[in-house]
Image (cartoon, rainbow, N blue to C red; front, side):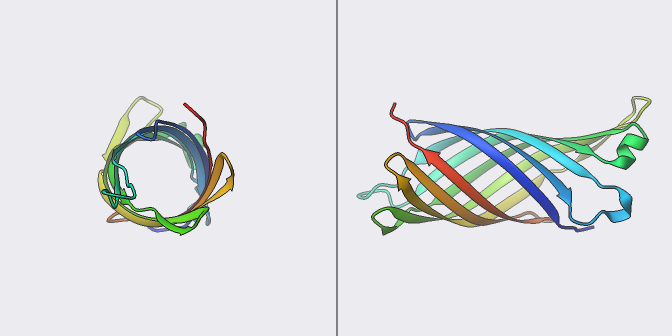
Length: 186
């Protein structure tokens, strides 16, 4: 069954010399339509590490390439789960590679088209009151595209707006991200 979700989340991260990024994100989602009165909601958190293997420069490297790995923990809740004293959780490991290019559109702004390919290895576990656990594997190949519009809003800060699509065999996700980047000296 396919249904739309409303989701909201936030993330914070730190970049070590522009070569390694560490991020932590959280989000909450719920279906737009309450099908069969279930009202399933999800709360997720995810630490991530990204390593930049190639960094674009003005002379010899036209594109950037980064690899990422993250862990995601999903905790589900609903009236039905509570009624039967059941818990439903998901554990996922994501691995991906992203290629992108910064294209200057003004002295203070650029666009950044990107493409990503990755793999998600995960399980969902439904635990029943008596201790019985039902496990389902949810491995998936994923790919996506997006275009960031990045502009400098102060001498030490940038803002980025990114519409993006992520595809798997069963799911298509459209997202809008708004990022505030604060530069610090090392």
